[in-house]
Length: 196
Image 1: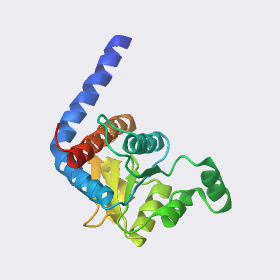
Image 2: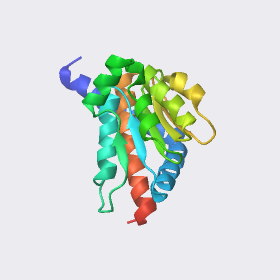
Image 3: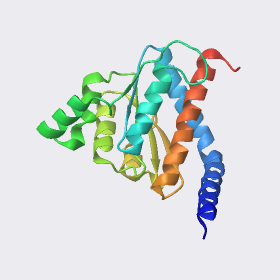
């Protein structure tokens, strides 16, 4: 297979998965927008966590909410729990890496806040621990996963929203996660500002 054919195949696989995922994820994404908008309208905040590429997605979502997505609007309260290297290294060293997000959720999370927990496998121990603490603190959880949802799927309650990409490959799951994040931002803006 030529390099250009390999590249075309990547685009085709990504587009096919996105079309497939739209059928199953549109309604849950709308439910997630409702949860996020309700929290923000009640002067609550969004906490976001994940590892690796999902850490980058966490920062991306927080940046879009604090800054702007595509339309001018007031700043929205969002914190990526992946960015403070002093907290991450202190907690990782003094406690365990599995606690780097959970301790931040315990410190910063308040009832009515939302935790957006991102893990392509749904099994990342530190993200799972954050979900457990979020429930202890009465936060709603919006979980972005793939591969059936892993352990996180079994932890979610009736008020939570599970956005599970129907795929096994990390790269494809991450591509859909990015699209989901943009859908969340667009939906929040539409809910707060009205359709444009």
